[in-house]
Image (cartoon, rainbow, N blue to C red; front, side):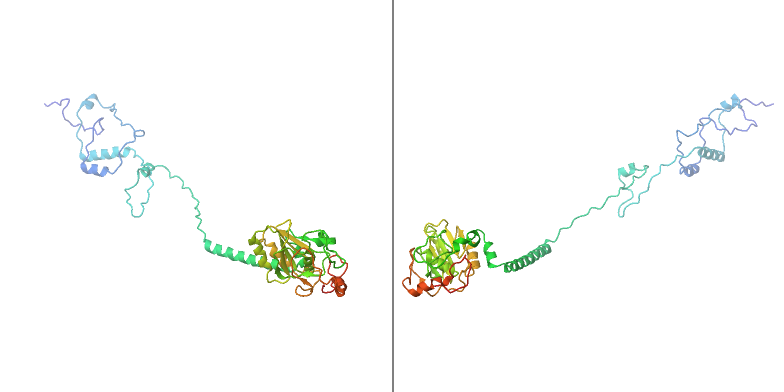
Length: 361
């Protein structure tokens, strides 16, 4: 009679319960198939394995060596264990499309570090306006044309304005001129021609009583002083008398002479004791300047020559003309009864305005 021992075989079925610490046998094929699965357990969330032995099993069973299980059952147990473990969630990564011509594997460390974080909202950058260089050529041309046009218009307007002025108004616009018609009209009065020396209020005089004989004024340049009594008569006919201080430099004297020579109704002579380097006078007007280059000299001549004549139309080229120099008047015709009769042909008593009588004597 055979007896069963404590560790002997028998008809008892082997237990299929997993033993704590025992590793199920898995075929290589199963391992390859299950390697694709993420079996890494989450340490925080993975459930603890039940390693407590069953209380119903006896001590013999727990101490007995593990029973051999079939490969099929081992694979089923491995699958069950794998399925019971939660899969770790992969961190979402934003796939960046590689640029053209670049490899997807050449991502920078900063881009890999930024994986898993939400992308920052892109800032909207305002476009920068680049100012182009201006083409100054046409601008300069247009400016020059505009300035020329304005100059022409301005000159034309000035001409129209000037042409609308009387010669008296033009004369009064000359800077520094003295208009005795306004400042001292009595200095221009005279009753009749007078023989002999005459005392004048202003020197050189520009009007008033004068000698019956006038100084020739056909562009004559006298190098010595002349009698004011004859020169004033020339002024009455519309001549411009240029006088200068004898101390004036020779080059300036010559510059003045060029303005006189060959010009009718013009005469020139030195004047001792003159209170200015140069003085110009005609009937009722006078201008004193410092230099022969002063532009007002030409302006005075142009504006007043013949126009300011007290006796319009009188000549400088005929009659009882004086051509000699010297400050003592020459009384030509004083003993001639006809000369005495003609003394009143200049108009008699007047206030400096042209009476329009006679041709002088």
